[in-house]
Length: 162
Length: 120
Image (cartoon, chains in turn blue, red):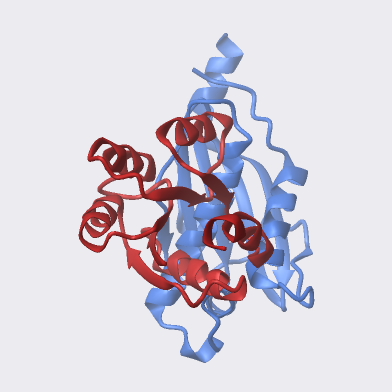
C-alpha cells in the first residue's frame, strides 16, 4: 500500500521551528538559519522510521557541538556538562519529535519506530532503496543542523505501477 | 497529588517535569516510569492520582497501558503527552478513557491549559 506524501518542505520547516521555539531557542535569540545546502557536513545523526501507509525515514543530523548545545538546552544545563548519554538521548528525542509530527500529517495506518542514534556523520548512513524527498538545512549558532525525509523507492515504484 | 510520568525517553521525562514546574504544578509528587510495563506496576503499587504517558514506548505502549489499567479496574486520571497525534490515535485514546492529548513539542501554557482544570 502506498500513498502520495503530503508533507512538503514548508511543513517540515514549520515543525522544526516549533521544536526551536519550544526547546532549543525559547527566547527567540538563536533560530535555525536556512542554508538550503543539502550537502552540509554533520558529525552525528539520529533517525526514526515510518512504515505502513507511508514508508521512509526522518533523519536529524548536526555537528557534535550543535548536538551538545541541543542537549544542554533540553536538559537545562551547560554545554560542557553534557554527557554522551545526554547527547544521544536528546538526538533520539529530536528525531522522535519531528517523526511524530510528520506521522500526524500522513494518512491513517502509519507506524513510527523507536529512534536510532549514530555518533557518526549522516553520510555514513544508508537507507536502501530510498530517495530524499524533503529537507531543512541550516546553521544554528554557527553549527550545521539538518532534518530530512527519505521515502522508500519501493513505495514509489508501486505508485508508478499502480 | 501524585503524578506518574511514563516515557521511555529520560530527556522527555525531564522536560515534562520541568514544564510541570514552569506551569506551576511542581509542588505535586512527581514519579517516573520508563516504559508502559513499569508504569502499570507503579500505578498499582503507588496509586497515582494522574498519569501522563507517552504513546510509543517499549515493553508496553501508552494505549496498552491505559487499556490494561482500565481492564484491571483502575479509573486513574490518564492522558497522553506524545509526539504522535493522528485523529485515529485521539479516537483510540478517548475511547479507552484518556482525558487529554498533549502533542510534543509543548509549552508551559499548554500544560497550564490542560492541567489547571484537573489539578486545580
